[in-house]
Length: 250
Image 1 (cartoon, rainbow, N blue to C red):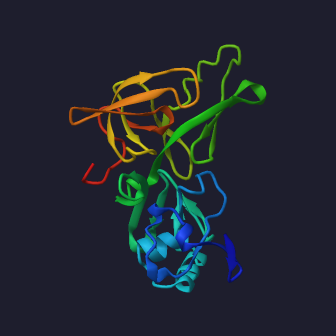
Image 2 (image 1 turned 45 degrees about the horizontal axis):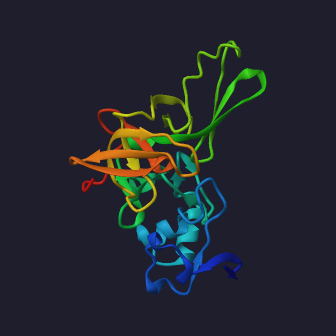
Image 3 (image 1 turned 60 degrees about the vertical axis):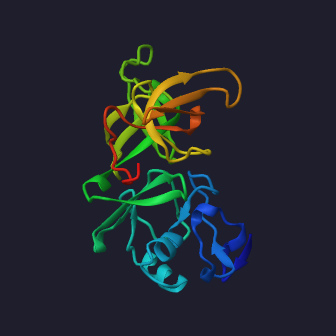
């Protein structure tokens, strides 16, 4: 990493393959800002605008559009050119009536999947962990860095706490209203979000919980074939049907 034009940048040759950077983009590439998504697995907003959507041709033009509040992520205006877009984030370009969701893909790692305006009003968030806060209430910590507070009437018998790690919430953005709880359980649909089988979607057949790091696995069935992946590589997306639209090849 070095500095170029006052910005922290990566040399193009050191960038992850999923960024799909072409030679014409020069030697340097803008480094994403620190955020909830892994630094090596996110798409800087400037890269999305200039290189993937090709709305403009240059760094300067992209920076200008972003600074003018042309783009929303999860329903909020983003003016930081280095803002990191990651798994399940929703990008809205209302002036163009275009909306996208960031999804895992077997070839590129991460892709922009175009969705409807209606679908842009919600996203799926996986529960990374949960903690008990003052008053006995429960705080859900989600994969994209956001937190949701679940208030309980009786801390000794928290009936409202029906949530577990690896469950997925369907929430409105930006309000964070919970629309639906998708349980991490056998029979539900999931997509693989990391590893050699990234992007594959199917029904959870077996969840094998074992002791030790990376020991627990999940077997997902698609077209009659079973794929085994790590526990944390699994992201529930629906029950009988996916709650989100998916690329046609899925």
